Length: 579
Image (tube, rainbow, N blue to C red; front, side):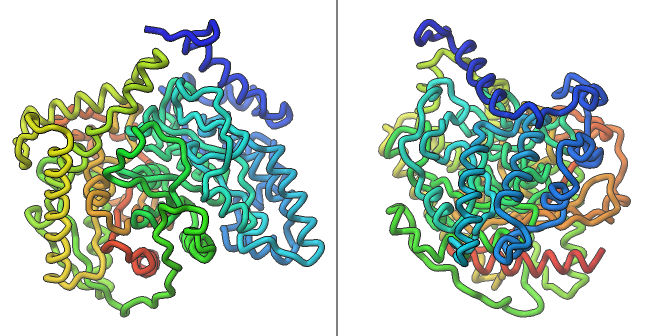
């Protein structure tokens, strides 16, 4: 089937949209053909490391000043320099706009560019500062947003052909809040088809690539944000997370990513494909950054605006200043699930992080698989997701086919059911309302069990793997059991620091993810990594994945976002000091 709108089928409509987006990049920002020729092609099938190769630097498009702005300043540094006038909003916005345009040409991470609107906004902000006025705590700071956020006058296509050519009539509440805080919103970023896979690929904007290795995926669904920020094309971005969509891109791209408790960050007024009113697991908006302090600045700034004034879905809770509980923490370790075994570098990163934390005096509690109930929580989550078929209806209405990642995900689920006996009762004979009631009951029981477990062990925080694997070849990431289970619990979750598998240098990069570079040299060099044949994952050559980020996940209990962040900072520093 190929639906036709105004004489054009879905392929023609998608191609027209991509060309319109490409035309918005100024000619003088185009990467030289000679540089592109040095990269192995076709891009999506070859291993090119754009970060270590410093491809953006080599393009010659950015001036030395612009390279300094985008590479040497963290979020708080930018805010301070913009406030004292040592940097202007115009020059910072231009630097990040140019770098984002370059990132787009390399990894297809953007959907919409608002470069001219951003420049005009920056001129206004510089004018305000010249009069001694700062618009807000984020005055002049460029921020990228995921494509599902509405920005008035700009499309919110979310990679669905059925949403093409529909300009947003108003801003999402969070967009208005960020503008009120003085931010400059300059680009929107790519997502997977239906936003329910971890491969950021759709029929409209094509495939986003991982800058560390473009043969691999950047994760999803906030994969465009992950790829853009990894290339320093944005200092701070906002994604959304319903099953791991912030934390998995942070894990795959070497960033900090925080999925807060549901309803803390304004998440209303966004483009979605779900059926209105069918919200069972709540999507959460949250920040991604290469800078941990930038995460905190985002939360503090947004929460101090009383966001409930603009978004009725928010629990209007101000940011709480909480000191670190004590110099040592009691840390629960979520074990590897026997149904979802870990890829060796993920297992190694988790084990090494625990070893280093214990050596620093933190108390480690090894939790059991029976206590953590990862598989049961995933059954609940997947069953709740399956209650709404809104995305399928959108695909059918436009005639566009599912992308390969959708097929892979379905095959994984089929194979899982072939060897695993579900723990939940059979619900096939139940009508949707009674099925929902049963799932809600099991979810409530699960959350109560976790509450008791937390108190029984007197835990401060838990460490868990963020995924079974590192970034993997396109269309093969599949299920996300280690982030889905924490979403079902609705706990505060962060991706923190990470380890690149061929690096001896520690890089402090994301809240729920940890890259511990030194340990990489002790990692077994296996010719092949079997990534879980029971689920149909591919066998990957070690050299193919070498050098990709690998992480751990940190989480606390619900509505303890402040404590989660402070303890993550403490753990992050502890691990840095151990290297």
